[in-house]
Amino acid sequence: MSLPSRSPSIARHDRARDEDSSFGNLVQSPLRAGLLRFLSARPAERFDVDSLASTFGRMRLDVENCLRELVEFGVVRLVPGSPPVYAACRPRREPASRQLDVFLERQAVVSSEDQAPSVQRFRDMIGRDEKMLVVFEWIRTAAKSDIAVLVLGPTGSGKEVVARMIHELSRRGREQFQAVNCAALPDTLFESELFGYEKGAFTGAHVRKPGRLEQANHGTLLLDEIGDLSLAAQAKLLRALEERRFERLGGQKAVHVDFRLISATNRPLDLLVGDEKFRRDLYYRINSFAIRLPSLRERPVDIPVLATRFLARYCASNGLALDAKIFSADAIERFRRYPWPGNIRELESTVFRAALTSPERMIRGSDVEFLHTHAMEQRSDEAPQLPTLREVERRHIARVLAAAGWNKKEASRMLEISRGTLYRKIVDYGLDPKMKVS
Image (cartoon, rainbow, N blue to C red; front, side, top):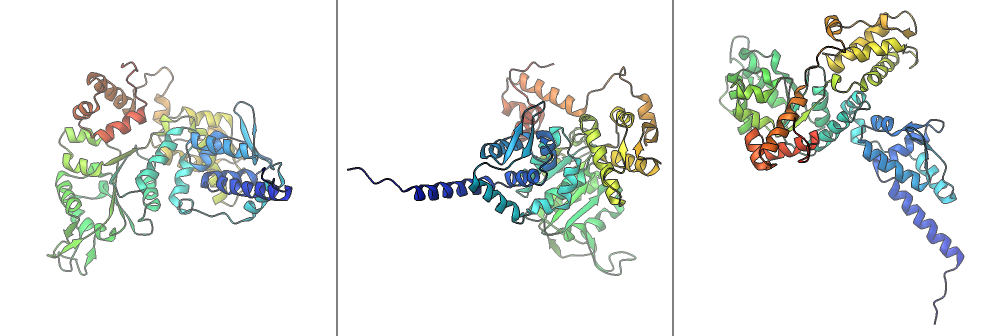
């Protein structure tokens, strides 16, 4: 005996319910929901994957996967080309179209990440080069725990922005963030600045003053330019980090603290350790998870993108239309050819200076003045290009791995780094046992 078939109305109801569920699952992902809102708010515009990855500060592969799912559901369309671009579209099915309208009418849920000012600042530093998107993923990973982070990078590359971003995305984000510039801290002031002092501890100590460690309790402490600390200061710091307690100057009572440590430097600490200018035990204490920021010279494709972004910011901050100032082709070419020893910070100040001094809307090459003009004069296409520290390290690790027969335990011993650090560098540098070692 056959079962009675469902009526057409019941079948339609079940189909609508399934579509509701599918759309709900689609926009449950913050990235898919963000992409859908972004494209729907700009129906006349088209965007390639790189520009969307830069806008959202996400890996290219993640954005591609989300866009593919949005296209399959029918709320985004793919326009073939080189490169292919994406645009918003109305779904053909009426239930899906209605769901889209309801979704867009709802107020967007702003995540804690999107609210963090340093996250927005860091996204401004991201261009089309995926090196910075990889850094973004490292930051998210580091923020999930209280692991000690070491941020490496040249001057002006945004190390403090990275530290603030880790803090704001972590569980300590609502607590204090304390930054100490170790390079500007002489030994005579180190203890009073970090540990604080009691009233009467020395001449002029009229009241008790808490130190930076105490102020960072339950929050995050950034030790910027930690490579500039003297050996004596390093020893005192190491003890406080290991015991998580200290005594104020002139005090006898131990102060217990709980804080997240982030360190930053533009100096090669591993070489300083080898030269016995930086304590090996302190180096291991602060280097549980390393994040390296590339120099601007390492991602030349981003220079025009960032320069245009900084120019728009200048216009907005001065009450002008975003396109009130634009760069000429020769100005962009000057930006490309300059080596940027001051990195992001120098690029931003150069753009602001050019926008301020240019009398016309079009900023020409002659309007652009660099802080290090001798660097521009010395650079030429024929000049020999020295390898970057990253390139030297990559080749060295590849040679050691080859010499150890890709025995990672032995290679990490030879390199004097942890196996976890070695695994991370193998992934970061794209090393493979089949590759030729130069």
